[in-house]
Image (cartoon, rainbow, N blue to C red; front, side):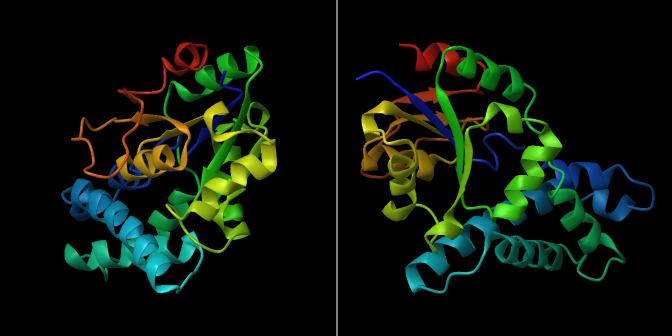
Length: 228
């Protein structure tokens, strides 16, 4: 069954989640933060994800903006920077202006040229996703931006993946689902999507019931993969 639709996770897949901390670390007066920014960026992302999973299994949903703030607060406190003047506010502001990875615009253009539908399926709140798409300048290359807020639970709940078929009228095997999160790619594979894991950090394969069909270093080769 040919691929008709390419669905992307947003954060870490299309958008560089470390860009906020990296940018803040270069700003004058942030020398203390600059010494710790890689650890803070890593902890921020990890806690952000952990809080989505915990809220999903306990039925205590909130939007992604709240867990993004909660994750940052934990990361800053862990490095003794919770009271750094203006730092929290600046990092949160920058999170609304994340850069897309360099290969993303050209990759999306190539997919559209081949007649494929393209969309985001993300834990992100609608306002956050709209800001990121606008900042990256890729809105014209996406057919839709789907947020878990429509179903009120975070990935990897199956209700989230159900949104793709409901929106595009496609069977799971017609979908190429792309994520930089190994757990997300595995869950989407278990759902029935053809999955590609953008393994930017060269991490080991997750020990989960299903595995992605493809493992990529970045997204530059995705158009050729979708055409197979």
